[in-house]
Length: 362
Image (cartoon, rainbow, N blue to C red; front, side, top):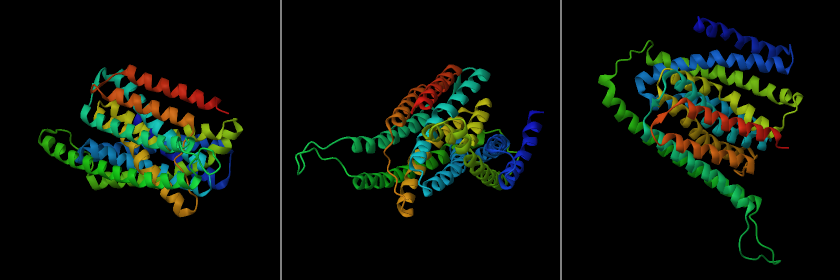
């Protein structure tokens, strides 16, 4: 019955496209319809991800889901960057990382724990992802410290020397290259360990796929394209809708755009957590955040340089506070290899606190 309702909601995708093209209804209607249309599309993406993970193992399956899910985020932010919305882009980057750790992981732990009690996962894999996330956050903090600090020596006029905007741009470009290299090494490590682990358990694996791997990959690609289209429509409606509701640009970038743009990962991670597949759920939540920090962010920096719209990795103090807090709690959660519904509630509670803080930031 529930599956029929979800499948029926697929009709909302062409309805949202019609409303956008025809101009019928207001921004709020387009926003609501396109947001609801993401739910069945994410469910289709989740089903295909599960099937692909049976063939490839949870690590590669989660990597596939994160990559396809973040394709929408990358496209949306490149378009925003081309239009000169630097602050919205940086807020969206911070919000995506925060949302994946606090919302996606939090909802997965909460609902999975309520259904199954204490759930277990591979502590080694989770710790590796959490450590890389902490490293990425430290890297994102450095440009802000560099921009705000001053060098101890004295300049020509006797004043302390501060880095120029060009210096900060060069630092951001160099960091982007290093982060991409680290992401490449992370992929190499993930693929090698996933192949050896999957080969070791393949004979004992009893779950039978209901679709062939090429079909699952085709559905993954098709649903991702549909999600990208819906994301474009939805993000286009966010700013005028939020303006009508009196929301700030920072709140839009940190809270609204990532929450909606990453809805695919949100629903898929929760879906597999409810099936007690916590390795896959954690890999999606943390892996997607890692991909944003180590790949999407540096790609945006380099793309901005190529487009003549240079963007620096200088985040404001509110964004840095949220990033550091999210990274720390991810490390704590991954230490014991077990999770429960209370830990999920704690993550969601922190997200609610941050949401209140960003709402009241002038």
